[in-house]
Length: 307
View 1 (tube, rainbow, N blue to C red):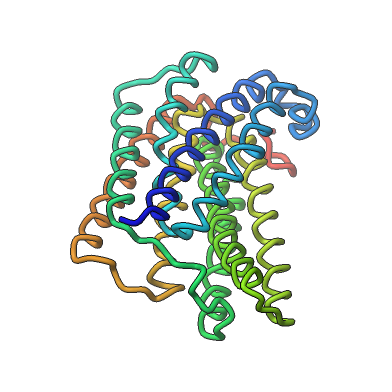
View 2 (cartoon, rainbow, N blue to C red; view 1 turned 180 degrees about the vertical axis):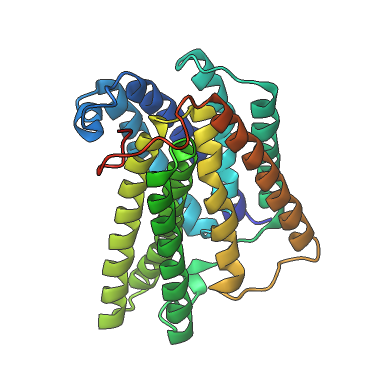
């Protein structure tokens, strides 16, 4: 492993810790809101929520950019999961959440998968990838559209399923972050070409598109996470949120960038990691539904809230 790979891995893990700590502060702030009042207006007036957001934005985002520049988008979601140790401790201590053995096993499985993602070395050299190659652009567009359709399905589904609302909004926020993570990697690669003196209209259009999708994905992901927090505990919502990221972003390594495994052991490790994530997320999702007091068949009003 070269120094840039190690730097990228360390930056991704530290960013994950920072983002998860920020989410603990945000969850505590959301717990103090009135579900019958507009959420956005309340959290933007909360110094605690803004403090968590500042931690993510001013520390987590720069670390994320360092990670993207050095190892690309494929590994980062898995490495982020190391921060769930901080999340679990903070949620119990600060948000007063109750953690059962199913939660412990679920979180442990997701965290264990982190090590396997790191060892798989599915790094993408964005600096030396031709990101304007027509075939790659087409595959990237199809992948982005497919993730957007998945997000729409989650949104429509949660309108009719109260007991799964926290889980579905968590999954939806994860899909938003898939877009953000993938396109941030593209953006950093395009900036690399720019720094090397390359410039064209296509490069400028790519930078604008990547910037817009990255920002939109990040902001939508943040606010959908807060909505999920209204319906579930952070110790279950956040691990469920990571599932789309940990499955789809590494999938882009093969489907979008069409790269080969870096070693013969990479695919087996990736397969075990994915299995751990799926089992862990199922345990956490079932636990969240069991703790939900909302009836599954109660009708909704036009806004999608309990009538």
